[in-house]
Image (cartoon, rainbow, N blue to C red):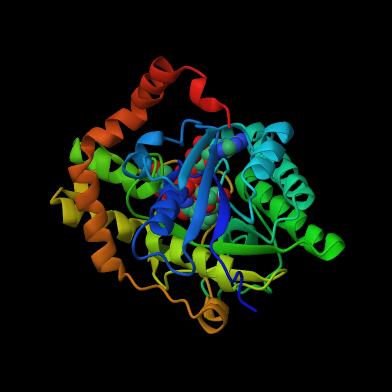
Length: 351
Ligand code: NAD
Ligand code: TYD
């Protein structure tokens, strides 16, 4: 049965990051799939990857409220859930970059595992009706040249990032099994689109190429990722929230496999920059070879499918980053965070 029959009060965690901010814009925008939301609280710690500027145009929406805080702060999370009569949680908040997890896994364990456990306990106490755990195809490990990840593929994460996400997924699974908790897990392939922190491949390479800096391709560049536009992923998460079945896992992918080197060449073509900017560098330790998603379950059960072609999406994404060069600079320098701190101090951090 679909959930619910009325507009809901929703808690989104990590809504100031790349995918979370696109998701909030989708839900509060005109083309929102599913029921309209009655209220939406965005709980975000504003780490290096979270930025209020990503949501500037909806900051004054009367249905929207921002709370600066940590999902691992049990008291705060309980207060937010109770005070706002939250019906459902969509959980994006995470440390999300594989390379950072290789340098230091502790924030990944703290936020992705401990934070999720604290959120789950609070959500259970508050008797919420849906909890969507936004996860990644990386929990399945790495594929060879053939085959696809399905929802039945055993979890075999290879990086500290993906293992922390797999641990969180298993906690959600166990809460569904043990407590009849209404959790739903979504696992998506590599997202691209506007507002992605410029440490990930596509925005980093656009920024470097634009500034005539080299593009560091790891290893031989033959690793394969399946790319999906962030708006297609967000529509999938919304469908999982409203139509998904508690206890189920749904894979989302773009049906768009590309070797990193081919993607790099496409970016250079779109930017009209020479291939001489490509620089092969030392491989990422433990670098997964290939990710590819079978999303037929989401297509059949959620009536979802990726709509944006890679050709169209990549072109629009390149144009967006070119038009928002100042955004990238501010994000990278942390200027907006400094501005926020100066303007509001901790005043906006309470719920
Ligand atoms: P991101 O790094 O851009 O954003 C993460 C957000 O979480 C930031 O706003 C950050 O401030 C916030 N955050 C981090 N720690 C927090 C904490 N302890 N408490 C509260 N907020 C905290 O990440 P993203 O790329 O938008 O990814 C969002 C989710 O989607 C993650 O769970 C990620 O694992 C998953 N995912 C990402 C991709 C991808 O390609 N980017 C693909 C599949 C799944
Ligand atoms: P990334 O955007 O970090 O996403 P993920 O590791 O979650 O897939 O990387 C995408 C692919 O691009 C991955 O195979 C690693 C590779 N890569 C590079 O070759 N150079 C880079 O500078 C970065 C950031 C990634």
